[in-house]
Image 1 (cartoon, rainbow, N blue to C red):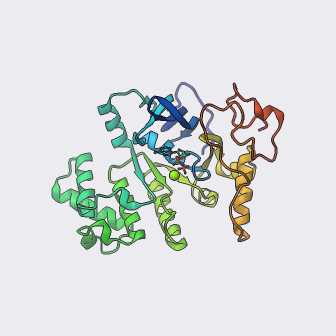
Image 2: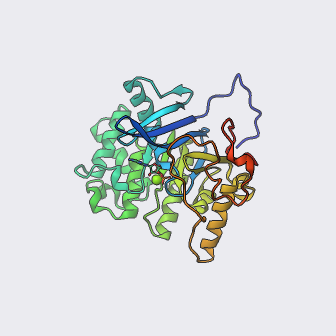
Image 3: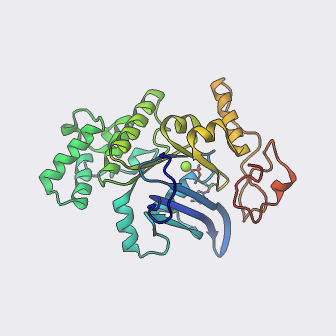
Length: 321
Ligand SMILES: Nc1ncnc2c1ncn2[C@@H]1O[C@H](COP(=O)(O)OP(=O)(O)O)[C@@H](O)[C@H]1O
Ligand SMILES: [Mg+2]
């Protein structure tokens, strides 16, 4: 980050600006749960941002809302998602498709989720390149092979003609990255992209993602349950818990001087992993049935105080921070 002072007149809007995003699940006419409760998250241009939190905290749902792929039964109850200053919630389907298609790409834990099993890997990447440029068949095919090669797929010319099931896990994730980058996104969302891989492959794929995103001047929203991965790859970190962002800021400040007790608990839990014990914060993540008037971490927080039980009109995630 630069130390440039904010100027309200000339400052361009953040690449992605999520405000008060609230998502509920419906069964019939009832809202059964509210898994996202006023999520605030800003990703500036050319910045790597980690979104960390325990399983079930709402990370993937946040990503799904951004790419317009919420699961069935989910509905946006409130909030705003702006891409480069333009509101996406409520925009026409065509406009949203244009905006997202040009600016956002996603990769998942399972690389096979982003690749079509019945098309060759190179063929489908070439098709995306054709859609996003005026390259013809031969040229887009050449660019697809080039892209696979840049992602470290060895013998890319030959492998371009293979199907994804013929790729190993690590190679498939490289192909999924090539696919994601083929539309030249300004924002790459990577949802636990290395969780299924062994430690060495995990390292290689993370380094590749960081290098490629940086080379292209794009931003990265890296979703992970692992704070060590956030530290290693991202300049900024947002910590999510029970459908809210508890705190966010430069990764070094968030992880060295956490302002929120939840971040502290998460860090301590990770420190015990290093000592070979299980990673766990005592207690369980609350099931969210409606808006909370108390801090969602209150029942597990070592620093809980009376004021944590009444946060109705607060914007801060921790009243003590
Ligand atoms: N399709 C769904 N139907 C009902 N609840 C869901 C669905 N998908 C996710 N949820 C709930 O939303 C919450 C957040 O899920 P998710 O965003 O997947 O968490 P994370 O990615 O942080 O592990 C969880 O409590 C989960 O049970
Ligand atoms: Mg998830």
